[in-house]
Image (cartoon, rainbow, N blue to C red):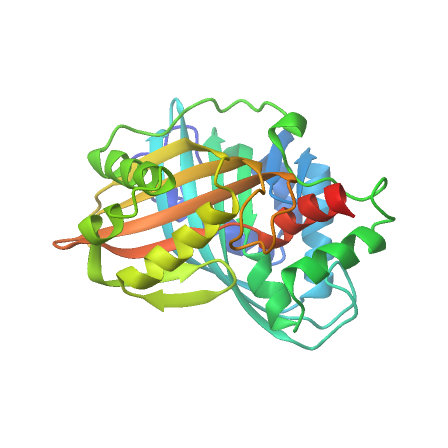
Length: 324
């Protein structure tokens, strides 16, 4: 694949995404963000909306000050689009880091972290101009020995209280970016989207019908599980907490590539009231927005690997801000 508009050193789009990520973070080429990110870039994460590469550079330096040895191990890049019209990458990363300095995660704990991130980035003409970034914060704080709800309460206080603190992402504070695409129409993206829609519609029978009996699951909170019963427990617990929330598939990609399993990437959201018992404890009636990304790999007996990322601490921050 020739990458029109991109630096010729990149062999293809995954090579570009993996290459610039390593260059920025591990090779300390933070200044290259002036080149790789547009000045008006919008980065939406569950915890905030950030506009402009100056703010991204500041956040990158703050993270590296707190975690100097951070590594970003690219597991997969599931993508759609063309270099001419723009491409969307859903980049799954396993990150390792040691908490060696004070920062957003509180006093230096010396804890060793291992957690996943999925970043959906839109790129055209050798630069990224729109991004959706989800870190498994639940995994990070648990590795510090802190529960996600306690972390959210503490973070609100450290950021100056309910009025002054950074507001978690909701559609109400979203900033429109240049990318308006919905992905591609590959059958695996459609199959994955349909499966999630069935589960969110309380059709839990979709799990034994569509998941491989030996499925491997990587779930929020840094949890690794196996088998259909574990998939049922996870999705049931999420949906039970937000039974009336609206489920939306925001973006879907299906892909088949040489030497890779057939796979898909879905960016999705749940928006509505925390009015049920489930993943977030006793119902509070708070209105919450869950931004999630799921990657799936398919085999001869159905969905055989699933990676799900959302930020439990951002959900708790929304609950705490509304309920005290």
